[in-house]
Image 1 (cartoon, rainbow, N blue to C red):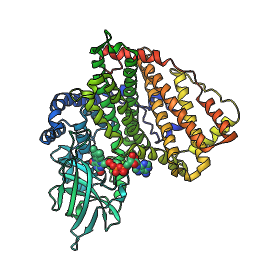
Image 2 (tube, protein in one colour):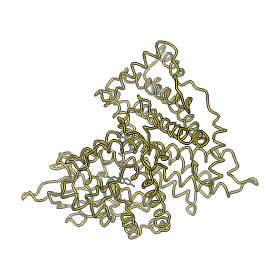
Image 3 (cartoon, protein in one colour):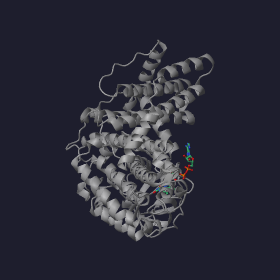
Image 4 (cartoon, protein in one colour):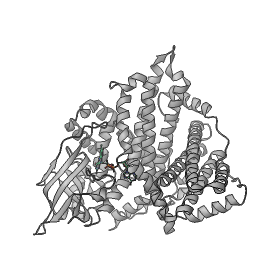
Length: 599
Ligand SMILES: Cc1cc2nc3c(=O)[nH]c(=O)nc-3n(C[C@H](O)[C@H](O)[C@H](O)COP(=O)(O)OP(=O)(O)OC[C@H]3O[C@@H](n4cnc5c(N)ncnc54)[C@H](O)[C@@H]3O)c2cc1C
């Protein structure tokens, strides 16, 4: 545990991980948590165990009086205001803290969704876009959870395509009110929230956000949806029937609602990733404890190789997820430290500092939601028939996890964001992707690749990360050469490039974490992290190679295809790790400890 943040204060550009080597002192890992991070983590953990978990059944049956009470208690403990400035009653903590809280609150997904809806999309629009009056009026009460927030963007006919909304707003003749009409759908917390950020088009054209109180005339809430999972959260439509909203409740600028909509979702994604990691850790622990007591063929099932393999993979998921999430929020905190908190543009600069890492936040969202789905699925498998019935925790976790791939931008939309954002930066020269691709093309065409001269721990692993980056650049280069700007219309290629980018960032994050542990605490302490890193690298390299092959086969044929495939094989060449032995070792450790723990 560190007493101060053990990372350099060098600001790192978003997306630059594809082109630059990172040093271990440039990445934040859970091993760098300060005493304060540990303390707030402990508070959130105790709150989850002693307050949330005993009330799960009531919340599953939609007793939202319990939910509101818990939100208030979380507010009193400082678990709901980490991202609200002190001047408005918040704690104004760093983003690592926000992620630590999300990670622990995720012990029960139903409440975590409520809490995330309130503290994230329900509150942050006012933090980042509110006027002084709006902040003063609403933030202190949101910080204390005296009022609950919600965010109403989606409609029945427009979710991903949210800018195409039908809700309308017209200014009243006396200029005092906007009159809103329309219906919003799938609104988290809608059943009991007090304040809603609602998006509607002024005069049918200008997409705009409004702060709408539940008590405003013409506002009503529809019936609860009957959901597959996160049943402990409220999801309802809201109905705007000549709803009168005071003109001073316009949030941000008329016609600039898209800036709010996209920024807020972006900000929310890293916390969703942290919750996925927290949820996966809980599932893994349930799976370990079940596997240790369930017997078959005269043995506990934790003794079977195929069960151990699953437990090891789940632990690898949690380890890599932690590395990804905390590395990203650590980068944000370095960038945010440069913002003049007392300056007039503090909110805008904060937003910009976070937006810099839009690619990384989308990666965390996609990767985390797919990792937790794998973990809860294998947990059901380990529970066997008992995994399929409601009395055991595996069933609910399986249902609860599924939504993460759908909300906060579906994973398809986020994959398009990842590649699209990188290409946009490359085209504008902000990220020197094109020169890097050209350099790599020249290098691979001029003969055998030179092996890197690396020193220190995990040399082979770091070389693999370099190979992954080259494979991604090579495939992206081949695709952009063929399609130029029109690549944006080739969704399958954009998706495959996103997959390579996602895996590369995850691989590098896993390696840097293990390397940092090895450098700071010695190779013995790093034994388990290194084993997990190797397993992760093995599976990620397979995915990257497959995605690169898919892209190359789509953009080349004949002799060109054969040449490019030969280059691809050269770039992907590596000696495989003995993943059976590695997974055995990882499984042995988590089974012995009865939980996920690195030390
Ligand atoms: C439990 C729950 C809570 C929610 N909470 C909120 C909330 O608090 N506030 C809020 O505003 N919304 C909320 N939502 C809505 C959620 O954000 C949307 O459901 C989501 O954005 C997807 O929109 P959609 O359902 O209209 O699906 P669609 O947009 O119709 O998508 C359907 C499928 O098509 C794919 N697709 C769509 N467009 C493209 C494209 N351009 N390229 C490739 N594939 C594409 C999608 O990836 C998806 O697989 C919630 C939803 C649920 C279920």
